[in-house]
Image (cartoon, rainbow, N blue to C red; front, side, top):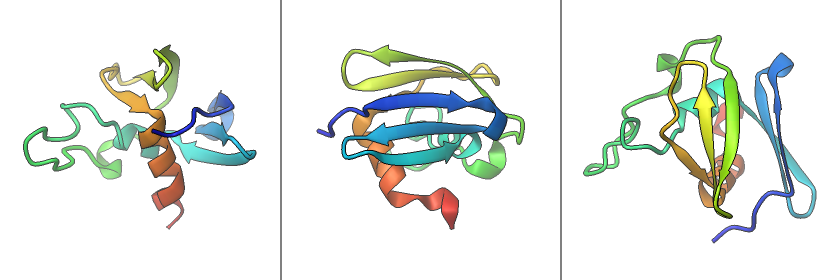
Length: 104
């Protein structure tokens, strides 16, 4: 299990979600990428683990409307496309940050 982030913030002007991890490692994940990596059953096939939604499927104007803690292990994010079923665990967010796929 990953340690929780030390700071989280939505920077709407830049369309990024900033995550600070212990040790002050800061990552800015683009909203569009983060929405495309939603781990819910509507976005990832539960049987095959195939991703059903990808970045190209996400509108350029996607925005994070709200983020709420779900216990001490995840965030529940509501997007302006009304999608709100994904729980972004600390482990999932850490994997996204470490992979930095949005940069390449």
